[in-house]
Length: 562
Image (cartoon, rainbow, N blue to C red; front, side, top):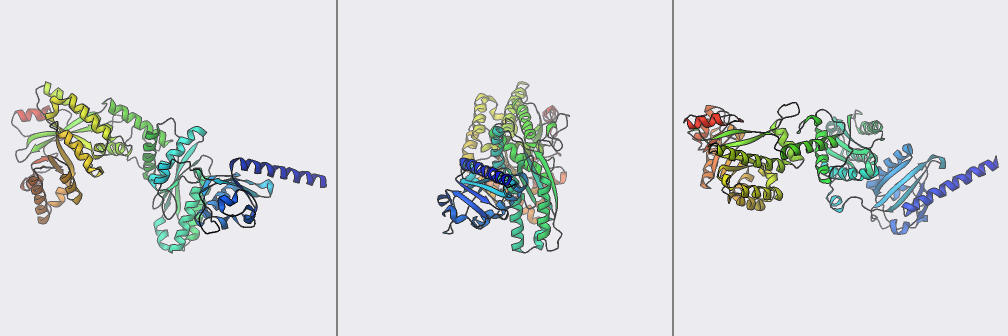
């Protein structure tokens, strides 16, 4: 028996030595922790890393030398390691004897039940695996320590790129904590902070690299994780944490959705856009975005399916595989057609019209709106040429997003189109939408000036009553502004509102800018905007968007109103 015990002890010693040797291949400092997380053995470069000798660490708990903000995370990581045998690489910081924080330290380790239920933890000076620009731009939710939505999408993109080399399968889980706001209101500040810190630690500890989890809004949390993570167990732990912290003992109900976030050979730029769109769409749990058949229902792999939709969308716009309709804008009070606004119409694989708002939302969120705008410009110039060949002298306004004006390649491409189509320029107008997206007004003004050099008139869409709108008309040379129909309706309900609207129109006239009223659908609204001094109007009262303008054209030729 003694010989057997000695043999077993020798085998365990050899196994411990092998683990120590393997740890030092990767790390600079090895810690052995007992079941109470007390350091029973330390060896390696503790002085340079933690500011104290390795032997001085023995007898202390790991938590006592960790910086406080990392204690919940490490506690949870070690708890998870007890179940699955290993602790994924995470970054932490320690408290040095002078009370200063150590440099970031990478921590990894194993739980070995055959060695007295001890943990073996290896530490090394951290090498930030994220690109410097991403690491520098990361923002966190102060309460939980989790990434915000934008930061999470950037980090997820980097992890998915790394996944291609490792072949790991990743999933994305979204947890919605129902009745979370009432719970937080029932709690004192200190208890609420402790609960939120614990939730953040739970999610980070189970996420890829220990830091690919985020808080999207007040009660929604998401994380990228390995496929074998027991999400149900994590959900139960968070629910227990909330219930224990709740003075009423009620807690929250958690609903969790999981989707594959596996990245195939998607270009990095497209992947980054697709990830952000996928996270937002997954959080909303609605089919609010641009969809062809590949994005209907809850997709099994949201990133790849989003990218498929991006490719499909890109192919359709590059090949001009979409329809265009034209809505008249008329001069007041005569209702004579002044020009048409051209609008894109896309259809899904079942030939059902995709609502324009969904189309534009998708294009903006995946940063493809400039490609759509350029395709509309190409199509419209070709259409104008065909109309001129048929003897129809018509003017058309093409929508261009404020995002596109911020895109130099788009603007250069537009100039190149104008150079090749100079004979059609007198028939083209540009209507700038989403002007709030223009952050660099000086640069936008330069491009708009270049467009106007070709004889192209410029209109600002959705011009309202906010102070920012006046900044745009003072910075940008434009010929028209279009006032939002809802703003007009609200203003014309009261005498003060009518005076203000009339004054706004007068101000534009003082600046030599003509004013268009949109969404005019009744005779009463037409009469009110005429009285307020509007120059033009657009709406169903004067004509709906049509593929074929010949009906309107015949009416004009015959001297009739549309």
